[in-house]
Amino acid sequence: MLQIEYTKAFQRDIKRLKRRHADFSDLKELIRLVAEDTDTAKETLRRRHRAHRLQGGAWDGVIECHVGNAGNWLAIWIKEDGTAWFLRTGTHAEILGR
Image (cartoon, rainbow, N blue to C red):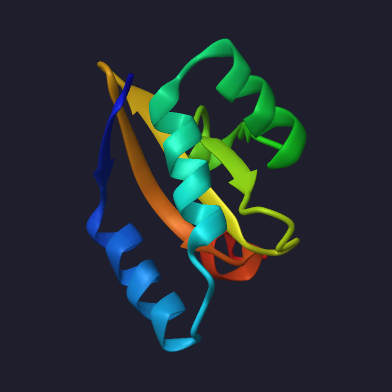
């Protein structure tokens, strides 16, 4: 089981999403799966949330996935020393500038 930590940027993203009245149930489920860190949880992240590692640039090596079926809602995190650090959450444009 991984410990979960949130960066200041992730916390700001959550505040912004709260102002938009976002439904956080899918994000909570995603965070639970990341914390679980089992083969089954990883497979669910790959299949349901399309989790994959990013390559190149500032995001090299971090993991990105879609939150539920929201299409353009992403979560980005990295695993280090038994901790999953959630870096950002939001749309492609908000996070990646595209």
